[in-house]
Length: 142
Image 1 (cartoon, rainbow, N blue to C red):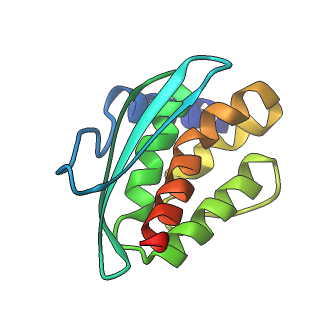
Image 2: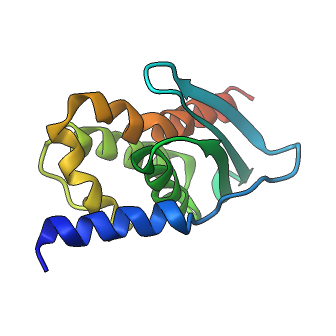
């Protein structure tokens, strides 16, 4: 099996069997974002206690790249401090632009490496990560 085939399988697994799909209580930090270019949309909810992301869940509709990325992101940030989660979002941003990066936090994220070859799909992959950034900003303002 080629590496590209393996990556495709990982992406499709997260798309067909998304991790952390669902909703949290209404007092969770909630961010709604959409990508008007392709119609992808996401609602990210995070339960944050004492500066730690205790839970992260998402709902939405979109392509396999955006939904898989959201699934991977929610797995990666749970249990992280807000600063660690923000640093992970920055790391992902560099990675998706094609800069060499490794993810000890969740190796599945590396399956999105090929997205950097398709500039139009970068917005799909970063949608949930942008929601994460926005949610952290909202929490830090409180």
